Length: 246
Length: 161
Image (cartoon, rainbow over all chains, first blue to last red; front, side):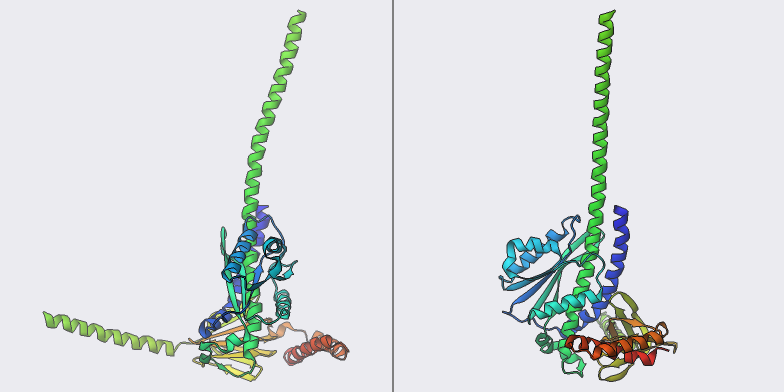
């Protein structure tokens, strides 16, 4: 099981590295433009995870992070979940704020097409000034940490103090940028979450194999002892019978 | 002794100034660094190139080193990358965003990019005929989709041979 997960991890890591580079363009622009967050506006939290379990605490961690962020925003937030596991976990506590839930994604490394469809659905929810994408960032083969991307709306980008560093020709470049930034961040978030999940699953599978090995050991000792006891009992019976006859 | 130290300090500060000039000159002569990224693949990662020709929605653009920072939306078309040695690499991109960052860096995010010789002219023609059929449909969403397809395919038609 560990080997199966390991080969998948390599693939997932490749997808993640490519998406990280893809997202860097956007990140660099945002760093230079420095758009400001709109205060007192409702925030949309997009929690990225997947449908499948058996991978340790990964879903619980991201749900915890989402709950914490929700508290920090004083409840003025709506939640969109990607993946069934986080949906069931968040539905118990924040069912009222859940606006949309996606499932069936996260089985393979994400594709841009898939992400564009999700971004489209999210845009249909209406205009949110702040969007935050929560995901498990892949740190190394054995660790991950819940992190977030901020996606800015059209207005925030157009009002950004650093925007004057760039020369812009088109009129609606802010909208294009904000749309692309949403899809971009979602893609990277999903790729990172996918890699984290696979690596967590690999560790979980490794532990499961180890535990199963330990159990097999202790049970085979128990089996041998019981068998020995049965043989001894039978021998005692036979010998007692023989000696009483003679 | 006092004077000696003073002189030393003076010499030091002099050299500091000189070094600052030197690094500045180095940045000015730096080449354009190109990163061309697709969602699933990285084609160029901060490689030094001579010139990049972009198909932007506002017209074609040639980017050389020390270009002012800009943000340009790409239209479907041919992206040309001229390397330091003068060789030209061509990619057909379906669209995307090109950003010249402060610091002589050009980053291009395209959704798909392929070399022109990877396309088959006949299948492009077939796809155009198919999209034209759908563009005559009565459903608005289908027409919009078909028109986007046509835009990409017509640009591609000139490139594929």
